[in-house]
Image 1: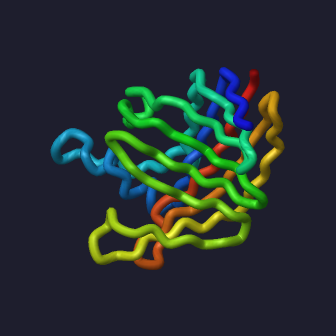
Image 2: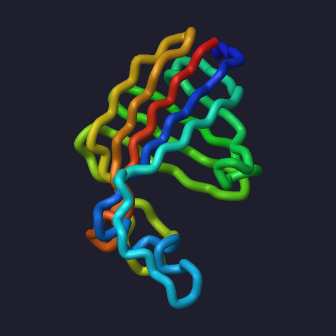
Length: 162
């Protein structure tokens, strides 16, 4: 039997940067022509928080959190679903952008397509879920690697309440 509930979702995302990433960021290199800012920012991370409504689905396969993306995320027209099962979380996007990421603590998963001939891997550093029929929290900390080099390090906290 499947049970669906309307929910409120708050997603807090943090993106971490190395000093090299910060120094060569597009914002710094695309400053007014002929001007490059050589000072380093005080923080090596960027944070964003998004609140939206969605659906919590409970079925024999487990729990799923689904919501429509907005223009704020740059993914307007997409539907995002976090599916929880056993010790892993799958993030699936459908619509204008299609993607499927698998997060399992300490594991690396390879993605196919998207970076030409270069392999893309998602390395999950930590994963914690405390989710039930009335909501809960998902914490994910992961890196994206292209051709063996880390290009992103992200941490997300997804809070769900009915």
